[in-house]
Image (cartoon, rainbow, N blue to C red; front, side):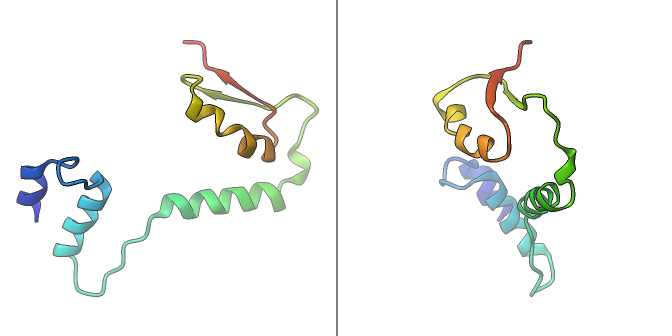
Length: 94
């Protein structure tokens, strides 16, 4: 499996690097082992905690979200950012 991923490259066979890593891990782990993407679970739990456990943590200051570049893709984030209380999206000055 590892030789296949290296020979084709991660993008060569249309594989995402994490998919290939998951496949390689499944080959060496005991049968029945399930791999869990904790990033999505952490994001859900953080959103829940912010909504339910810290409702008084809001201030009167404007909430701003920052990004490395303002692009069409980052602009698409605005509706979700607004839902979580971020009124503007600004390019981070470096």
